[in-house]
Length: 225
Length: 363
Image (tube, rainbow over all chains, first blue to last red):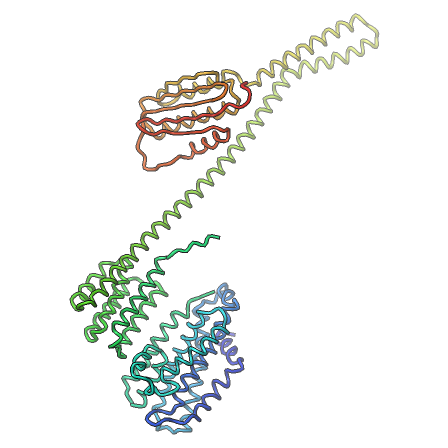
């Protein structure tokens, strides 16, 4: 069995994975929309995706904490291969999650709501960012429980102030300027661009999300035995 | 466990780079619109890429050049070039800094000019620090290697010394066995056979012959006793042997040596004689190796309390390496083991002074 298949199986064996991937996106569609923006489910999905990504890197974090990485380091498997396989498995599941939301949204809201292909691209870039953020976050802790406990607070605040749980326009203007440095902001920015059909702004959001992903990957991919 | 806290140059590099990043960010915060933020993130990514993987500094030059080009369209991004100045300066590529420093000096105005200036200075500081640390580490490695070699050499010498001791003991035993066999063996065998013959004569009650035989036995045993005394005398070291040996060392040396021996060295305990011999040999070797003298003088004084050697030469050559060589170090160790001391004086003349107290009875 390849590491990719193993990671996929391990991720799916977690009790919360399937509800998070298949059920919760459908529940999000029940949240009523606000006037002058895309359905709230699209931005709330950012929060769901963030937590799902954190859950999916659990195997990598626990491998390090249980010392499995030491055994892998002594085998012919390279760290890059190990990490790429795990991240690819996590990315595949997050893509499936976004597809569930997009397909369900197509059924519920119809195809005229937005450009679903661009939405999918935006979600893909966001998924890469959340996965690498979770990876980088976990490298700072020795216990997954502590890491999750802190992340649940920080992640919620990040999503709250970057306009994912409620529209950004409700925040004070000074705050709106400040939150631009947060990676999660760029999903809200991208969604707003999608609603306004501003292609350049959407592209910028996708590129910035990918750069954030790159920075987090550089931090998170360090082999810490 | 050694828990020394050391600040590595790489930690200082990261810290200063972080501070500079924050500084540039806050200076440009008011105009941090999405395109500028994108450039800022790209610069962070570029720096972090170099942190994780080691690329040639030339690649960083390309990044800096691209940023310069970009700053023509986005003037707010120009301040970010300060980070590259810091990077080049800390990697001791001051030549790379020149075009960007000139560009920044021409473009920036007022207090903002201080940012690239500080970046350059801090970078140079970090670079020098790293260079010094590298040098220190190299020196420490060299010292460790030298210590390792010295330890190996000492071990080797000690093994040689033990081997030599064992061999000389074997030779000595062989010599004793040979002397006993040659001198005593013959007489004692003859005496033994005569005793057996005396038994037979006494059984025949031939008293006259028995008396003759008894006399012969007495003569044999007396001769054996004389031989034994002779053998013991042969085994004992000759009284004048040490002095002769020392004199030979001085006379056969490449430079003329004026030597004086006061007192009777042969009366000193054998261990002291041995060390004195080694000390003279070592001192002469050092003169031959490290000096070009016109005059070498030696003075040996041996009395009932102290054995002293003073050697001087006037051909001191200035040497790069300071400190004591291996031979003198071993000599010092041997002398100190006997409660003595070794000291040197280095001026226009090199003077070696060895003093060993004479403990116990003189022979």
